Image 1 (cartoon, one colour):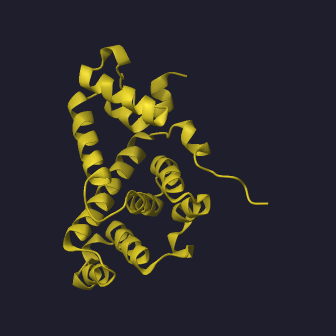
Image 2 (cartoon, helix red, strand yellow; image 1 turned 135 degrees about the vertical axis):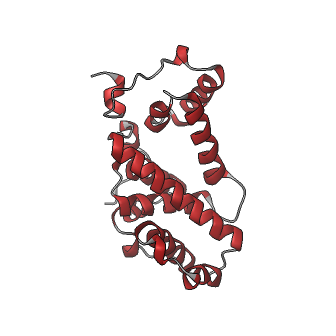
Length: 197
């Protein structure tokens, strides 16, 4: 099986590391060091250097930029949006991130399966309800939905960031579905913790 076939269903030639522009080869080396792999989504985007640069810059800005949302909250949004869209790639990758940031394997599974079954703070419930509604019924978002976020302490900038994280994953879910993008196998075993017993 070719590397491309393990990543997506499209017959697009992906560059080798040696063929990547220098900045992107360095970026992939950083991924190797920090994650122990290059996420398949980045490998898939590597066929178009400018798209990969743009995708990576925006991803890093919304997931790690300054603001009132924690890394865990951003990942929870990613998983809940992906759960609504049944996106196998993002559920696998970002479910592992929720497990990592929370230190709670069960929370990662709850976000993947049904966040409403989790014991969540009012802040997190409001945030995830907003992200789910924005995913499923975007035309129905109105002022009471924004006010519900303010009522649990989110700032106007936080609401902007929640919307951007949710919108970004709605986009990536659709691209992943369209090309049958497959998650790296390493994600499945990450941050599972010690089994209870």
